[in-house]
Every structure is written in structure tokens, then in C-alpha cells.
Length: 215
Image 1 (cartoon, rainbow, N blue to C red):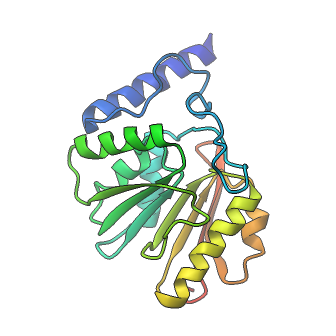
Image 2 (cartoon, rainbow, N blue to C red; image 1 turned 30 degrees about the vertical axis):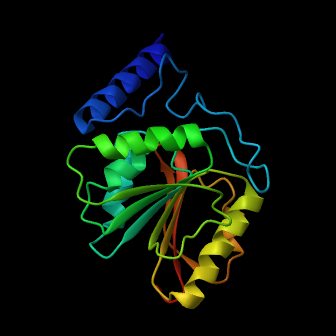
């Protein structure tokens, strides 16, 4: 009973935040938990086939992470595996240059675009790119947010994609890995250094990384 009440309150909180922002990112029906993959199945279009089903995180945790990051007007915020665009929409209320979502599932891209168009209080433009993060153009990003969107192979290749972009567009970057299930992959990246870590943040470990130039 307590778990059911907690989940109902969580769902109500999500719906209230959606309403205030003028978007729709919550589940269309009852869910077991905020993190349950209730929406899209794993995609067959992934390069490595290791992408996870769609899930998102609570509004309060999104805002806390953004408070830690403190993005500025020169930042370009990427959400890798953006889903319906909840994180992007909250980030776009910050004074950043641009927010970009990369998403493999076209139905989710369509919802994210609708949410971007209807968002209230937007301070930054939002772009939604349908594609695989391992090969997508990530070359203008300065902050990359990932809520455990895929397995170790795609994570490794996505980080390599970001690293390759630094050669022709040198810049300081941050990589936020929320629910850091495959942190060992990033640990092996010599060009990245851990700049912050939260053992439990919204029930999940979070690590924040910067490139060596950033250090």
C-alpha cells in the first residue's frame, strides 16, 4: 500500500510539473515506478543493439543536476537518449545557447518535438535529432547528459565520437552519467577525468567528467 501511494504521488507530481511547463512526459497510465521502462521497446536500429527501453528521471533530480552543472550562455546541452524531452525542456529554461536531444526512436522524437514547441518559459532553442549517438554529429556540445541510455559498447563508441569532435573543435566539455551502470567504461578513458560524483542521487549513482583540458 505504501509503495502504491508513493507511486501515485510521484505520478501526480510529474503531471503537475508537466502542466506547469506545458508539456507531456509522464506515463499514459499507472506505472510501477518513475524509472520503469513503460514506453518504447529496445530499437533494432541501434548500432550495437544494446540500447535500453525508454525511461526518465524525476523533475526534482533533473533540477538538482542542473544546479550542480550551473550551465551558462556559452553551453550547448545534449541529452543522449532524450526520449520525450523532459530533461531538455528543463535545461532549456536555463540561459544556455542551445539544447539538443539525440534519440533513436522516431515516435519519441515526435513527442519531444511537440514538447519543445509547447514549452513555457523557454530561454534556449531545442533541437531533436533522430539518430544513433555513436555516429551522430555531437561536435558543438559542451555538456552531455546520459541517463544510462545504452550498454557498454554504445557508451564506448559515443564517448569516442565526442572525443573525435574535440580534434576539430577544441573545447571544454562535461559528461554527466546518471545511473552510472557502466562507469568502468569511462574509467578507461584517459582523456576524461572525474570532477564530481554522487553515490546515490535519486536512487542512482551519478558521475560527472571533464576532458583533460577542462581539468
